[in-house]
Image (cartoon, rainbow, N blue to C red):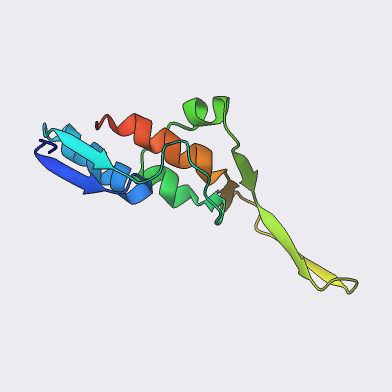
Length: 112
């Protein structure tokens, strides 16, 4: 049996962010996940500037050894057909690898 003030099931971004907030409040937090981190994660690989702000992500620290690709536009079209380019003139998203992102947040939160 595990003993902690709070036990969180799942070490993804939501679980690790919640754990970090609880740790900042002085609680002993244990995260339980069926996977061992870093884990493979097959899903979207981008975050917005708002995510950086909400998670108080240190961009210099994060991007030092991880994929972090600013995106300011995209192209859309069909295979073999014409495409349209959209340029926002500012960074609207960052390409990341979820394997790296999730592991970073989990280690940063300080939970067991």
